[in-house]
Image 1 (cartoon, rainbow, N blue to C red):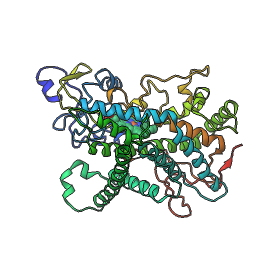
Image 2 (image 1 turned 180 degrees about the vertical axis):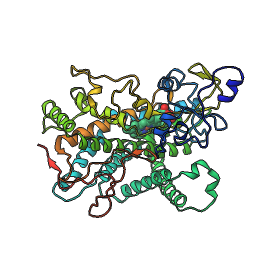
Image 3 (image 1 turned 180 degrees about the horizontal axis):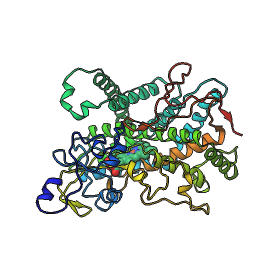
Image 4 (image 1 turned 90 degrees about the horizontal axis):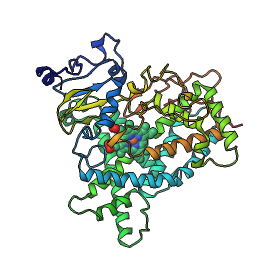
Length: 472
Ligand code: HEM
């Protein structure tokens, strides 16, 4: 860390005082509400918090890839899920199980194929109505996919249990996003607060539902109902328990992993899709080009398949650009140094926590000319081929890379291309364009559009008024 390395005459990483340095004041920048953009200007934070914040782009890759194992420690090692479990043999086998389960279901994509049809149908009835907020339909589709993958439930749109899942998930996301002071000062938990009470209620509902699903899965496994391949994540984890010798994946691990799949898999994917729609409303020419490609390569009749991906480089480039310009985690969950190591030639002590600024990595003007412009062509080589620059890491990299990447990519591709095949997004004639600045919650979300009212509530995202035209 800064202090100790200076004492030995080794150049320390540039550092600024902890409190008072954020947001942005130390560099003379105007205060801004967004941590990730402030940290683009601030260098690093030394002890006592032993947090380093990186703006030097090469170092991000060093943390995640070159020295990925040294920095593979979680932010808080007391968890029993993947993101917060201590780096150990147990964690590795647990992670492998989840990864293979998600990839297996992801490649099949059955659940996503069913949901994409529902999603398009959800949008159709609003073609002629006066106002529409797409976020609820998108969240429902993504949540239903995760329900199928985790415990094999495929709900109808109005199913009470699906509504329960969506409600508790939203409740958890909202209250965590509002956490603020409690995150900084955990002892504040002792004082009654409406947010914390709501969080506890949502977690109780979630745990009850997941425990019920776990009990049902255990009963059907002991009845010998399992096939050759596990049918869902819960079954994969339960079978993984059987194969364990000394270190055991406990029921708590299984439940926390199921819960984490909702936490990490719903808000991220649905928000990315909503950002892409928002950017297409700003850039109708992007939407038109993606639709032209779909029409030429797939046509308008046959449903899009995963194998069409290779023939739709522009649609893929739109997704890549969405992931670049609005990374859902502008600052990654801290990585902890597990051993004495170094970064950029500077010594780093074990226990040092590192924050990787994904926002800075994806907005560095050297790698991304005009970084604030939405330009899917960045991901094409000019001859119709794809390029993926090495500084593009929307799912992280190395030992802690996102386990849901293949599933998320599959959902983004099938949902977006199916929507664009049937629907054109456009603004009401005199309507405002979506605010692209974003609001930092659990993920970076589009801001509320407070000026426009839908029939029932203030639209979270944008009102697409009377303009859902069926394409063509
Ligand atoms: C971790 C991005 C969807 C499960 C991460 C990380 C990023 C990320 C940046 C942190 C990597 C690091 O710290 O090095 C995204 C994006 C998504 C998405 C952009 C969608 C667009 C999903 C889905 C799932 C998932 C669908 C599961 C169903 C996880 C888990 C981790 C993680 C469990 C923790 C991994 C670990 O700490 O070892 N994700 N993710 N994510 N993601 Fe995703």
